[in-house]
Image (tube, rainbow, N blue to C red; front, side, top):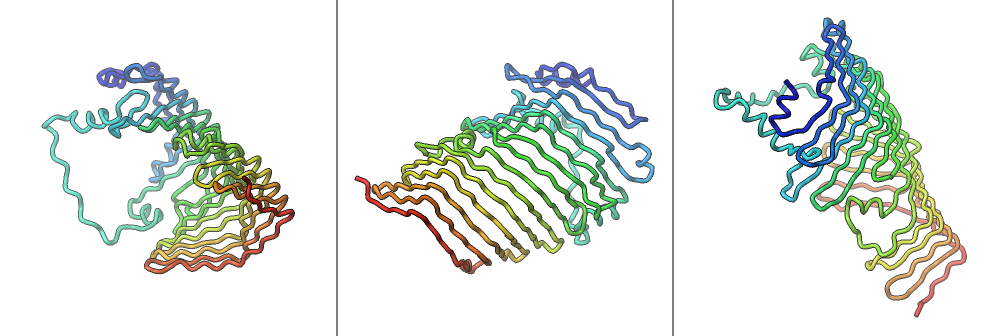
Length: 361
């Protein structure tokens, strides 16, 4: 039935017959499956396996014991008119087919119910009202790649070596689940791991993360040219600790401790001239902030940057350089609110060695 439906949409497929469903055991699996529209590159799902705890359904708990997805190869393109296609399959056509397939015999959609002022504000309230809970023991996505190409030709390639989510359950909202990500975005490394409480009254997320191999050329693959005439150098970011908390009253609190490493920078742009840096370190320590329902924002923390063998040459020919420099911004604070000028308090301390300034002819 599925193959016949897809043929009717002129979608070339193979492997649909691998679908296996065992309702009494709560198992579903299929793959490998390939698909494409017109003469586009083939999309692929290597394997999907789902296991549901059937016994839990008797207790009004939908517990997914395991979902494994691997070998995904998707290419999403945006046309000049803003429409999207998935490996040559126009997504707008599929959606239009879904809404019109019933013909004129379908009854009109019922009017939307009026807003309910007693609507629950947390997942726990929602579970109590509906009488059902949902849980996920393990979700794994392995060796999968998604390519997005926008109307300008910008390309973003996400390759997921492994994404893992585990132990998330609405009926145990104060017990944290865990997550782990190992991926690349345009060859920029992304690693993150931590715990989260998405179903608690106060939503909490804690993380350690690393972003490696940041280069201007990799960013320009998606954004297009940023105007740099020289774009050498690499930036790596290491997030030692990060946390965020979301309260039911709309307040958001966060904290961050991170380090950035700059190596071999040689950037030139018509707007600011040229800057070179052998090595540098950016430090963010004890950074904390909050944002509340009145849109009031506060930030505080200790900031610093250490530079080695740096030189700046401006368009007017002035050159500034030093062998070593350190800029400290301890106890920096920032407060802002709607309709008010931001208030910033900073006491910078600058040390430099072998500083020089000259007009180069």
